[in-house]
Amino acid sequence: MIPGWLDLSAVVVGAFAGVLVGKKYSLDLVGFIAMCLICALGGGLLRDAIMQTGSVYALESPLAIPLCVLTALIGFLFPSTIQRFPNLYEWVDMMSVALYVVAGTDKAITAGLHMSAIVLMGVITGVGGGMLRDVFMGEVPHVFRPSNFYALCAVAGSLAYFVCISVINADQTVSTVISIAVVLLLRRLSLRLDLVTPANVDLEPAVVSTGKRAVRKVRNVARNDDSEE
Image (cartoon, rainbow, N blue to C red; front, side, top):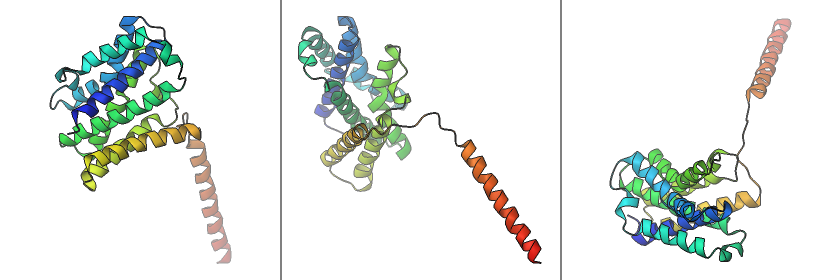
């Protein structure tokens, strides 16, 4: 199991992402608290509800909910500090995804799930809070839209943690650092190079055209063989 301080670090970072959402949409104090709870604990709640093994972290931890509320209060009462850092949301969101990917993947490994389920739980934990955030704010979840490797970064980070822990038996701290680094590096690389996941893909015309060309070539070869005979 990952140490408790890492789980709490993920909660604080996720809650801070909720503060930034509350500031962006000019929410009241209730809205700030709700966004902090959703961003910080939403992914874990989805994971625990799906896995149905062990305890629900948000309810078991005596500090998770109070830390979310405290972060919301600080963000609501002292918003001017946030405005000084225009790129803060991007970095906080990336770090939140990275930390929760590790937490979710580790819990799934501990539960003895198979690899595909482990990666799925890691991804859901990483992006689940953001999905619920977008739904509550009346938007199509960011993870479903063309974006700069949002969910793909979570997949890569979960796979990296799984391989480090279950395949090469690396130290947990090293595995955590590698997983977080993979998520942050891929996300930053996709943003820097403007790599966006595709949408509205239709391969039918290309496949049909290729098939027709192949059929014509076969017919031409058959005709040449017949003429030579």
